[in-house]
Image 1 (cartoon, helix red, strand yellow):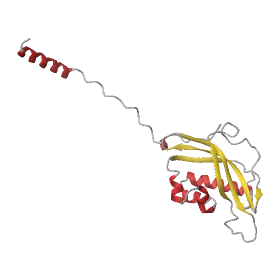
Image 2 (cartoon, rainbow, N blue to C red; image 1 turned 45 degrees about the horizontal axis):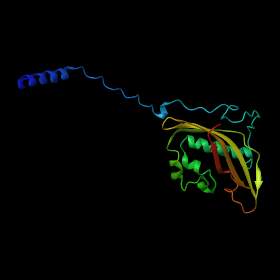
Image 3 (tube, helix red, strand yellow; image 1 turned 60 degrees about the vertical axis):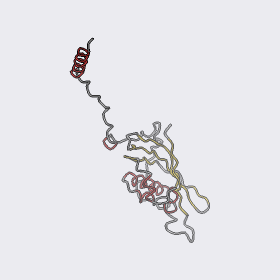
Image 4 (tube, rainbow, N blue to C red; image 1 turned 90 degrees about the vertical axis):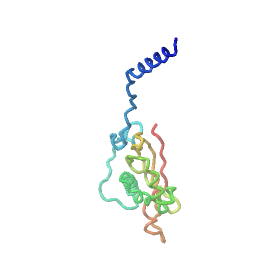
Length: 190
């Protein structure tokens, strides 16, 4: 093949390559909708796996004494309502020791633990009977925590909240006689 003929063949091939239909653009997967756009997560029904016990005992709806187990459960309800409303400083203050029992040194540090949640809520069960020890009373309240991470992943945990208050003994302060959260223990539902 002569050099002129080779150059002409190369030009024809280059021109043919240019006239080839373009490949269709590759489609990327649709973006994941923001967690806030996803439906709200619902807790399991009582009596079902991962739900609260199916206790049909009516709850007294009248006023309750500040030292009662129902007052302790009210603190738990307030705590999770504060978290759901993103009122983290108020929730942190419901922990014993002015928030120290939460394991976080400040309300700001406590709040950062919840940055990853788009939704955070709980169902609060009936409190257990108060138990006494060394001048204090303790109550355990069952909870089912549910919500959604910012990634869209659902959150489901079951557990209990233990609260403590100092009994009405001489020298105790009003703050010490309020129910405060000592610990929260949770695990994925079984």
